[in-house]
Every structure is written in C-alpha cells, then in structure tokens.
Image (cartoon, rainbow, N blue to C red; front, side, top):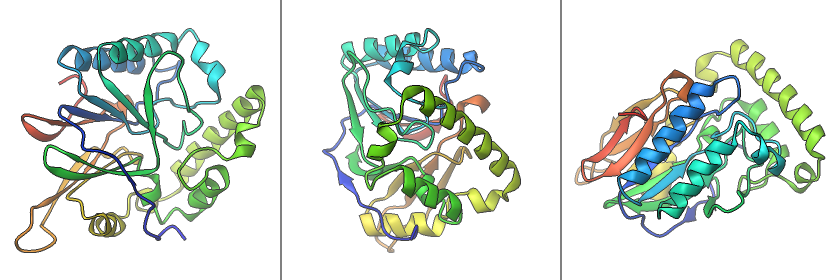
Length: 260
C-alpha cells in the first residue's frame, strides 16, 4: 500500500533563490521557535524576492481558520504577509500536523500537493513533506489515508468537524503520537531510503528534499548511471533543535541552519 509510486504534481521551474523550510512546529510553549521563524522570513524577504517553500509542519498543530486569530500566531502571519507584499512567492505543502491549513487571509500562498517535481538552478527536484516515505510505519500510513485524500488535503468529513471538537481531537492525537514515537524503534519511523531512491528514479530527478523525521542530513548519492550527475537527498531538521533550511542560490545547493 505505502510502497506504491507517488502521484506527482509538476510545477514550472522556480527561479533562484529558493529556500525550503519545514518542521518549524510553531507552538505557544516554544516562543523562541516562533521568533526565530519570523526573523528568518524577514531576512529572506530582505535579500530578494525568490521563493519560500514551507514543507509542512509549520505549525505544531492546526485545527482550523479561527486559529489564525490567536494573538500568539498573528506576528507569524504578519511576517508572511509582509514577505508576500515584498514580492516573495510563498508555497505550502501539508505536513502531518498542519494538513488542515488551507488558506491565510490577505496572503497569496500556493498550496502544492504531497509530491511536487520542479527544476531549480538546472537541478530536477522532488519536494515532499516526508511522511509518505516512512513506509515501515504502517499504522501511521493507515491513519493518514483515513484523514487525507490522494493529494494530501483533509477529507470532507475532517473539514466538517466543529472547530472546538477538531481542537480537542487534534490535541489527543498529538499526545498519542508522542507516546507512539517514544515506543517505536527509530528505524521503524525513519525514511526508507530505498523507497526514496526508487521515487527519484521514477521521477527522473537528481535532488529530493523532505522533512518529517527531523534528522537534518544531506546524503550525496552516486549517479544513477556512469555518465549522470550525482544525486542529493536532503532532510530537514526540526526547529526546536535549531532547524534546517535547504537553499538553492548562487552558491549552489546547501542545507544550513535558519539563522546562518
């Protein structure tokens, strides 16, 4: 079930610079994370328009549009609104914690499906939150299919839940997820790199950017054929532990800390 090849959304090439950030997990009990993300957005907007791809789990949990009025989150949306006004293109791919986030008043955000293929600086790139690559965690994959459709957006019955009930259920689910994470072996929940390479072969790309598992690693793989270019798999790090951002710019392809 989870080993099938993904449905890929193709988007037009993205002009550099492009920054890819995810697993920020903005939450009221981690104000320093929110503040670091705001500084990052402001700094990116200051160095040029470009594109900011938010690769899911920007929020530690997202229950519905009413949450945007939370005073703790208002500065986050203000920073994104200012970046949008400055000409930055904003893109969002759903994560497992915030797949119900679907719009932001006054901010132009492109919402991408689960797996997107594009070209950046001459590199063919596949972008995905990463949870679909955790093929060994079958319980999670079954739950995901129950909550979300083929493109990663919430199913109609999830959208229909009252805000208060959604918030209650989401809080319970997060606690259950934390218990499961402590119980399961790390390898069981990690990206399956054989599957990742198979995705790359299928999509004919030489770069894969993902998040979800928070490892913050850059794997450089040999080329698929002797005459080809080497391939790269970059995995983001969660912002509670410093974070990681993938940059495509004049210096090439890099995985760096957000405030580098």
